[in-house]
Image 1: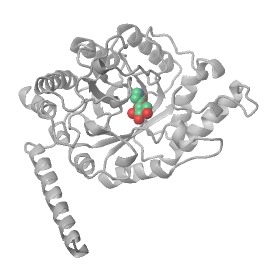
Image 2 (image 1 turned 90 degrees about the horizontal axis):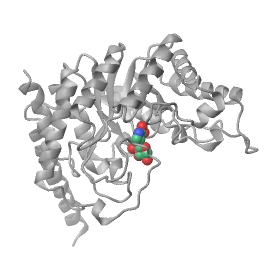
Image 3 (image 1 turned 90 degrees about the vertical axis):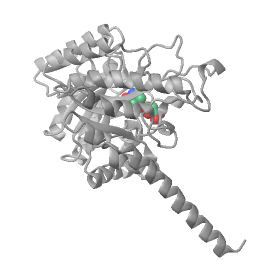
Length: 380
Ligand code: XIL
């Protein structure tokens, strides 16, 4: 075939592909996109991976612009990415994330300043292999937070200042942060963030706060921070949910318990794992890595209709709870735009096919999407 024929053919292919994509999207918007449907209730956010930030995936670009009004970076603000070695900062992708947010007029969330995961060893140890002293680590923490938050002052609307500080029983995790600095590392992190940008919102973010012991630990933690005059605006419930956990009443009482403290509540990383999890504890401890067995990956090609409908019902039930609590719930962020981008294909078991979001592997809206959009109308 001649080169010119090939060119015409590939152009035709592109036109057909674009038309298909557009018809799919306009179908999705027949009664307004998600962000419109919930505009009087809360922000609708999405976590962006590196490809999304670079706008490499056309289907995701279109969905992001039409359906969402808030963005969180899935990884590029984490310590190991933004500050991989002493004195070295990688601002290229975080800058692009902020530029994209400005271009699309999105609310922007920074995730995350202080965590025990995805933080390199050099942070805690000196080059001789010995642990840093409290003073050394505090100085580094201040430098990191001041540099990162300061760079995006006035642009990033809110920060997950500390991520996952608590154990399941509500006690403080004995992370390197606690071991080296002491329990006041949390207070210091919030103080440094507030100094760097007094107007940005500051959050404590964690998973499985819906379980009572851990929730009570978080309440104590927040009361303690408040008693020291620390500014904290919201609690982030990560929202890495299962089909049967948490119950809607657990979720409702959790939101109400934090709202009672005068805090906003944000669902910061919503997805629903539809795959069997047997003895794996609920939550989102990223260090878990269970061996793949066939029975743990029952839908490698497609999610059966029955399960799609169950997922739609589960999403609808959760959104009913969010909506009832919309005085305190100010944002719902999904951990990814469409299923193909979800981290749940590889966690807590690597190499499965999961279906946790509202848009399928090709970006097409799922029954769950329509179910979520119906809730505000039904509750009127
Ligand atoms: C996950 C990302 O989605 C993955 O790409 C990465 O490999 C590991 O971290 N809780 C959090 C998020 O606060 O930062 C985690 O994100 C998921 C659990």
